[in-house]
Image 1 (spheres, rainbow, N blue to C red):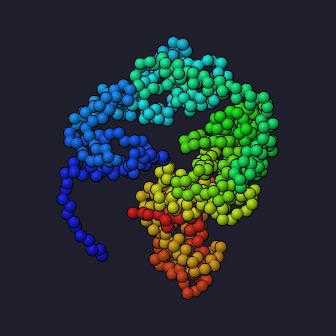
Image 2: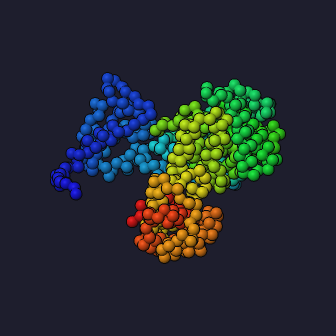
Image 3: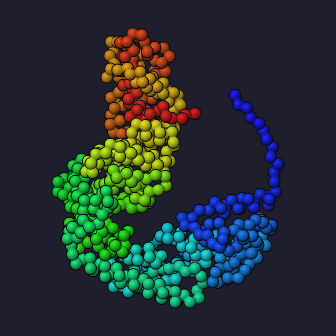
Length: 584
């Protein structure tokens, strides 16, 4: 029973509530770096100059940091810098647009796309296949940066096209925030940029961008030619001078561990000796590009440059491909490695980073993750799932940890860390929380198997009589848990000659008829089919519990009944722990 009261709160005028809401809203904004000015104790990302606050046509009056709200604001900083008075909220967007500030980000995107399309048509007069390479992330970023975006087009010397395409993209996109132009196959010597402003003096903007881009490309060309003067193998000893972390040694130490790890992984997955040696060769060379000029200048190109330099050094094409792929996936949404061989080195690289960090007690806490370990663990799982590799996470951690020195506490923490990442991935896949708990309780050592069980359980839960079936399964599993808590030593299998009651005989006979087919389904990881066959036992399980005393005073009867239940229950548990489910 509960005691409660009803309290009537009289409504208030919106205009009287908004000052507090607006104040709290502004104060709730947090920045990684804030500033304070004058003698004020108010911190903010940038100095506050003015506050426009309206509700319909009424001014919402409040004050922050000595600045009072007003009806006035300013237009675009350069195109319309004067003060503007806003009479009401409905006229606000149009007045701002006339003042060269487009408030709607989607409208800014549309403006950018339309202007890019027009410029692309002009470029096709020079190259009929010219097209802007789509880049939603860059478009999103620029749409928020530019209040009144105007698109421009420029070009660069075609001799820079000899640089690897991803180097060109890095120079254009990452450092200049420009869109790349291609003919659908290779990059063309043009770029598309965005300025925040109108078309005035646009030629000067284009020339300024070209100058900066030329300098960047010239540096990249110089780095590229210098780096190719020595082979990738000749660069490997220099890794001894690059320390991963004081406790973890150098990158030269790391590649020695990677060679050992990839050898073990190749053996586990039945990779041929010839291919295995190529994977180990790639492991030995994969970090050598860290000492190159190009990767020092463009750290994000690690691995990709290694693949290029491996080709330039005359390495086997597969070795070069493995090196190129070994850092994938590098960020959320990035593709995993295409090749199985590249996948093995990528897994080894990431698990070595994770093991080393946990062994040295550099474990993420809260939102802090300076080593990007969550991303690395997620990457391991994504690669395993993409290639459907049946790799034991625990064994992988064991083998990696042995190369550092056994640390049971660190090992368990890393296993739990992977469990957390697997839970996160299942949530991303749309699996409900109770089904995640049910699946996770039975282990996450094999991520492929874990995902299959979760998806199967999601599908199984749609069955018309699922609730009734779960009630029967839970009755069975709960008594087994109770027996386990009591320390009862249950026999490995039931004996038919010890069955007494009709209901237990009936359950036993039905179980014998379907047992082999269920085991075949489970061996094939067809969990839906296995469950469908198991579900025919529902009524027999209910009848068994309604009419048979499992915990009989006759020890032999009790143990035989528990053995029968455990044999059936163990098959359900190969799918999930159904006691974790919330069914209505």
